[in-house]
Image 1: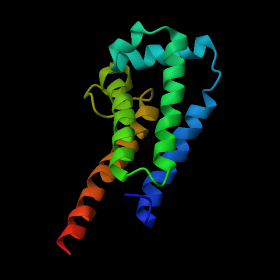
Image 2 (image 1 turned 135 degrees about the vertical axis):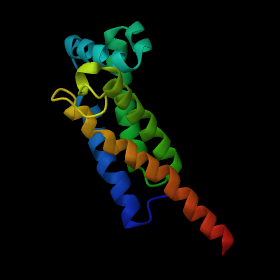
Image 3 (image 1 turned 180 degrees about the vertical axis):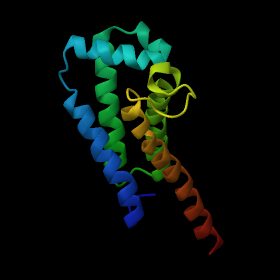
Image 4 (image 1 turned 90 degrees about the vertical axis):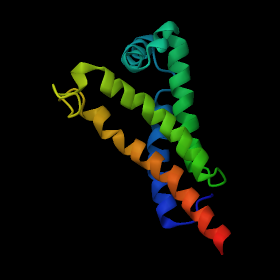
Length: 144
């Protein structure tokens, strides 16, 4: 479903602009930054350690740009946008939950080092809203 309600605009435009900006800001990142981000990401998704830092940097950059654009493009259905955002946020949440330094001893509450990633949990909530909200509206239309 395309952007057609104030709720959809809010659910898609805010995170879309944020993620797109994050990707654009990574264009041309240096090898050191790419290495650092790769090491962080590999804590949540160990297979990412097998890439070269430059490859990972491009993957992350273009992935963020693609997710942000998917959210902002009005002709992309909510479910597709929700899937893209869900995959992206799942990667960040896997880093959060698999890196003991990011959480308190209970493994859930964020430590000082984990606050930034914990705040990104809102992206997961938005992805769920996009995935489930469109299904309800489609069912209502079919009943009419």
